[in-house]
Image 1 (tube, rainbow, N blue to C red):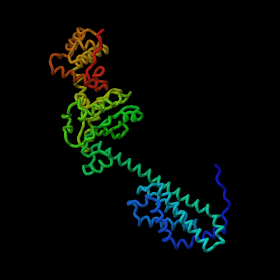
Image 2 (image 1 turned 90 degrees about the vertical axis):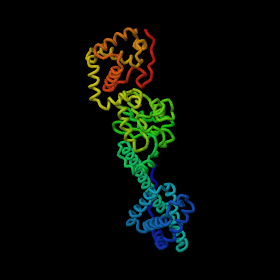
Image 3 (image 1 turned 120 degrees about the horizontal axis):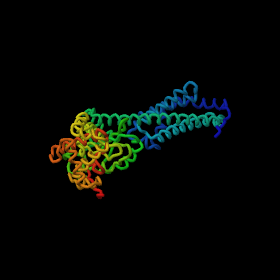
Image 4 (image 1 turned 120 degrees about the vertical axis):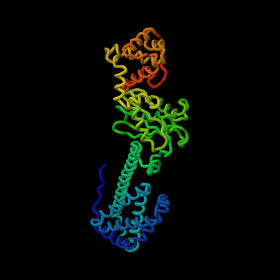
Length: 444
């Protein structure tokens, strides 16, 4: 679009404008009363209890003084008038007054000033009335200019306030997750983040490539009874999960040793199992979920537990619920001891050639997951049960441990788990990775 080209302003018209505007400087209190009266009558936002009427009167008075003065001495007062309008826009944004109401207020003030100019010229300088029309466009351009200044100040302040609000929430969430939140600040944090101070919580940790793209998908699958406040970090996304609608301090879900019945979705463990089942096993992603804890003050503890679970998770594997993988959690918490255990117990087997080594390890893993049944292990491994028994006997000979002694079986199971978590592999074969019973394949 081409800009509108106006003819130069008529000097006589400017003189008429100045003669009419000078007396208005002495009538500013009356004009202010008129603008405030119209504002309160026509704009509900200015009738709200949050608007201090005395402050509003002085705001309108300052604006009129600067703007009428700018009609008389534009070069001297133009910048001061713009600063006054900018300040009003910023202040009203901080107070939460709607922008459209503020825009109408400025145009209403402009209309009152213009009508006062017309009335004065018509009454005291009838011959000049025909000239006033030549400056009408300039007067309304001035009003539009200040509306634009106010709108820009409002939007900039609104963005700054939104950033401050978001940053404050990020800092609060970070303090909760780090366990550095002061007890005195918990009530304020609870209100700011919408998290009940005595609620029941867990922390979800998600790491791996592509988690930004998958974040929306993960959010869409969260069960209705669980609300997650995500807190992205450079190394992992951490989610503060609020469990259930009733967040009282009753129940026994505040300690790792007491989680209720796994099948009951009203318990913390039931909700966590539902959450883990809903989260997708996406390529490259690892997900760990902590125990349930009671209260905001313990979210830092839950974050550490979730990170332990995350270290037990396999890329692209199912989410790891910490309370279902306690042996692995203990081992990843002390990788040096885990490595020593794997080497001491499995060393002779680990030093075999690759194919031979993996055959024995896979056979023992399948046998353990099939609750010591050689027949079921054989079905899973596509071999005869006697083949399984022969491999197990060779395993016993190499390691010097007996599969007939419960404490040695437990030691072997821990050593296998240590080797798996230290290599970042998925646990077991097939669905057993999340503690589900293995489904036997038909024997061949």
